[in-house]
Length: 299
Image (cartoon, rainbow, N blue to C red; front, side):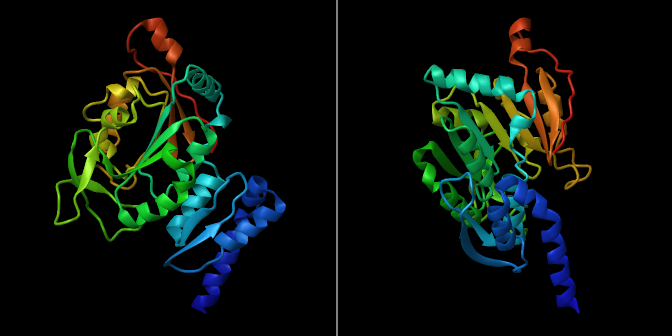
């Protein structure tokens, strides 16, 4: 009976998601990918490759709920597709102007996981350089496979983003592949490096990040505690809030205290808070001003 219930649940889940797959990839490819990815297989480290319309190279996923959920969020629901928001017109205009001037914009993916957000961003901004940071080595193996076709345009760093340089360790190594949290300190051979945003910009030869995507399981409490001048220079910040995961730990408070010093428009996109910096408002004021606009958008 249990197996029948699981099968029925898998079929119901696949049926409910079929319109999204068909709308995103077309009828034949959508149904093909639906059948390949949404059918229940249990948990396995086996890595499979998938041909996905819109991407020149294969997408690699483990047979796991976490990887399949990442595919759903990043490549089916397209939660990092900023084009659906009107503020994106300015963002893409700034991107094109930067490329025209011969400057390669820098996108930083904090919490790269298996690299699907990196793949999406690198595809949407083909003249940008992308740096993706991930602390867990098994995730890094799949991430490297997913970004290898981009060559030196994508840089992969093992570590975590933090407010200061130092050493970090994974606090919950037994967690699922999408839930690892980092804390300060080292443990045996499990020490990883803490990178600041300014350090990553320096490594990439960029004065400031163009886009910063942040999904770091509560580490934003440190990231926005110190060395935050980059916030006023980034054109877009995408952050997944983690107060639901870590109740009463205030992991989002430093973020809101920091970003409120600058003029941003704030939109809701899926699980993320999308923050577009109002460059014209900063130019008009001649200094950092307090942002007040709040706009919401559908996922």
